[in-house]
Length: 117
Image (cartoon, rainbow, N blue to C red):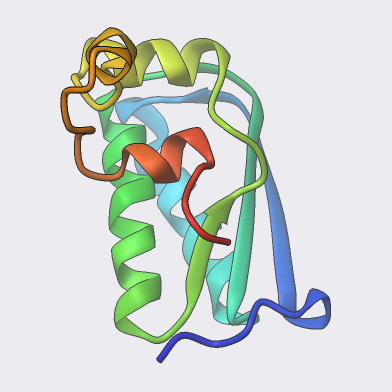
């Protein structure tokens, strides 16, 4: 059973700048620290300027870790900009296929902000 996402227990973190393999350990540490204090963590990625697949992997691993410990990790808004481009190049978002009725890739709802909140 997942905890309720009350406004009192929602932690928020804003990630900005470059989030690539070069600084993956720093990004991982920031996510882990932010998750320690709250049952729900909301991540704002709107100011992320550069990403690669290591950042996508970190977010997915953090989301799984949150689930495994009965917590919730969610995005503050649907992905856009460089993160969206990285997801599309990596096959995580296939918007043309979705429009054609082909089943969505795993976690597509998470990225596009369409899953039940």
